[in-house]
Length: 203
Image (cartoon, rainbow, N blue to C red; front, side, top):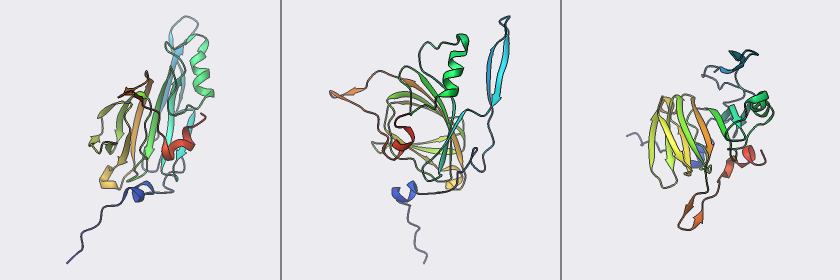
């Protein structure tokens, strides 16, 4: 009689698909296009650029790739003189930006589980391709499919790419906005990066 297959441990999932992602996009995912608009001397709309982003960063043991679509450092955003374009081009953001915003697209290798982490920000997470399990630090979890949106209000969480039952790459996009400090029972919640710290600290 066949022995039931054991579910992988969290440590095993954190090491899954090492070496899968070397370049943008991740193997099996299409190259996305970023289109930036602006104005000509008459105030008419023009296309400023068409590309796939200024900043790409491989994360983990070549298990995921972050593509920064755009970032801003202030609200309201200064568009005059292309100040925002200059900032976004010259600065690769950390996890989020105080008083600003980050739009980050992530390509995930098959079956990869992210470390538990918390950004003290309001995050809109959209599944672009594939299927993901969203796991909260309470143990609660939900499956998200293409087009589903998570409004993450500074909660600690993990993402598990379960696309194709763990056999396919997946892609998500997040829009991260700054928020005021979160206080629970008199204690202020802090940013938590864990194994992600080397990729976001001092950015």
